[in-house]
Image (cartoon, rainbow, N blue to C red):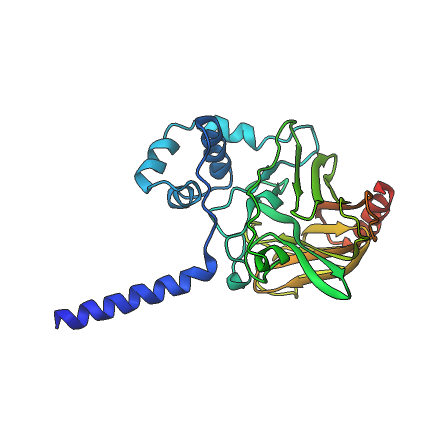
Length: 321
């Protein structure tokens, strides 16, 4: 009987591991105490549990709890204060908790250096996690290739070559501003700048061509994940509208909206299981030595006249160019 129980337990444990594998998250131990304290505070601002903090930093629950108990609540509150009046709080998404609810096998070990949390302006509103970018595709010799992916799912050209990209972190040099740049093995550089401005968050994504060949077919996926945004996480597209260059989602009551947009948007859509919004741009062809840039926007809106709000935001987004 005991042998049967042990076998059943082993099978159950193995099944649990198999079920958990697609949802695996990235573990990043802090490089020094200052960085560890920042990420502890950041995760508390995201309302992470002690277990999630331990997973993210590679700590035991006991170690995580000891460190969390040393963080003053006022420090967490200060981190969530907008840099300027009438702006939104933004933070690097810390990892350790998957930013999706479903379709987890389509995003294993999400990388945090592409993800920024934009916090809602209302009390206990939570945050949207924007992936800038989620994926970068290009055409080479008539073949569509995946140049970059912010998680593990479809193999990139670097996966096919057995090359691993070095993990990066957002630069946090100025309040209300984040930036990161990655030079790929082929000398193509992907750079992102995020800035909280009056009324919303401005995003800039650029590609610099360090190769000797023209880059074409630059299709980009820009994803806003809604799991952490209170009242917006229903796994459906019935609460969303897609009018390029914008995708927008309303809350259960229908009186609050979150808006994601990018210029040069060729596809606005949503994936219900995640759930998420997409405003996917096509970056113009990029000659050797040239840099091409697209601009994006995230904001929140209270009211029911969403179409008028999108018209207003469209004018702003177009002026950003």
